Amino acid sequence: MLAQMVANDAAASNAFSRMKSRRAIAKRAILIGLLCPLLAGCAVTTPVKNPDPADPTAKVARVGYAPTTRPYVSLRPAAPVGWREQNQRVAPAPKNEK
Image (cartoon, rainbow, N blue to C red; front, top):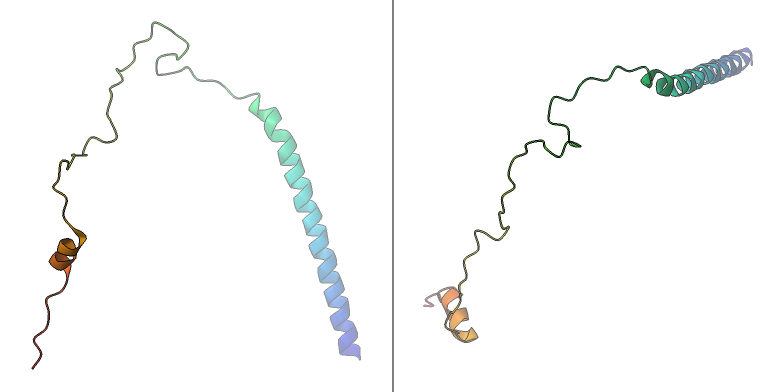
């Protein structure tokens, strides 16, 4: 009986300490979530290295046209072949029976 009481007490204290640590983690997360936007306003901006996109006189590279169907080669006109002839060409060779 004494062992069971000790085990129950240990489990209760363990649950309490876990709940306590979860609260501390939640408080830290809320604090970080509130401070990050405030500190982001203090960030130093750096000058743009590339041409300014808002400048209409900025030099930009030419845009070329590349069709997506470039490797396509038309196979027409092709002579129509009956389905029986096509099947005979791809069918396996008959085995010799003895």
